Length: 528
Image (cartoon, rainbow, N blue to C red; front, side, top):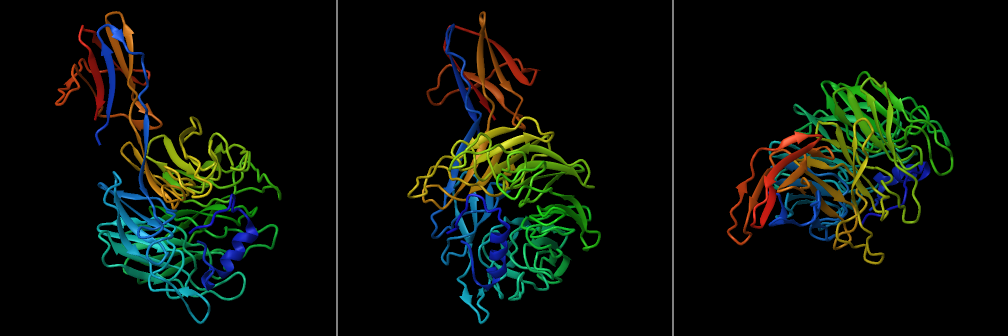
């Protein structure tokens, strides 16, 4: 099982764990909306719920896995993901599940580790996959943070039906000195990106200075290349360098340039956003997060400790920082791909507690998701009314921050609830549905998979002998395309629904249809 702290942003704690991690110290659709009119008497206008939260799967910590810390990927009606714990050896799993929550399948159980002569916990395939997967054809690629031949993590491939698991690369053993060094990197906590036949990724530790690497490896496991060694950092309390340290998130690719974030280091020791060519040349520190006080709250103007990957739209990068900002609880930010025009889009507000409650969330460990429009979607691990995290949206210009969902409080003894809590990775978007993972909670207390679907609200307003039916064209960045207004006078099966004419008039972001009221009761719905 995974152990949590309220806020793990501590230099000494993270460094100590990193020093010995390779030596065996592990942490553990069809939408229908109804409205009713009876003769000329109108039932008061009501808003149909615009979003529906569904717990797709609650992890049991046994055969299916536990504590899913990574985001999901979708292919057709199937979601693929990883659970960092549980499974037959308590080393994590790779799974598939239908988008409606049915058909959950454990595709791979990571095997039990044994202690080698150096004290490292090793196995054949890896352990604790905390990053998400990528899909190419019928093959899934990913990383495991620990295990492998030296206990320092692996890069793997597996078919979408669970066959053909292949350990593509095992990271080599680290030194017994601090920080622990090697030639290739260690503890890959981030996911991969694929271009042609090459996988690109990050290792949060190891390398020549012990502070992480960027790497490339072919999809058949050959040609591993260390693209960049993050440089040594200055001693406590500064932890500064020119490029950053501990890149624990994955990379994104645009043409021949990789973009990413390092969780600390840089000019003020609080992390960087960087760019590097796919051949390892041209490393550029695009932004160093600024200094914070030595005591809580860790406030500044831009954020600190970026632990998630970036998203790219046009020539703008968007991301999150776990700490810093106006109240020390993290930020959503953007900057241009050349490093200019850095903007703090949102500072998560102050919390009270425990638990750490507020209105918007706190500590956004997860990256952002965009549909390509003007809206970003994300999660915060803590905060919200319960203190167990939020799902949010925000416009790309920083306006319109909206809490889309607030996770409920788990039982203090069993750690169970109906929905999960503490989401730690990015959401997946398909149509008008967001899919995600929650690290804890659920019916067994070991985390959940969830969906959050959005449908327009239908409103009915009387107007003389007519009714005016309205619904929005867009909410929280979702375009409500393809919804048709229908009516029937009888809901008894088989109900016959007919289109309501004329076609909607669009004004001020609302669809509007005027319909005469007859003496018979009539039911309306939006159907897609």
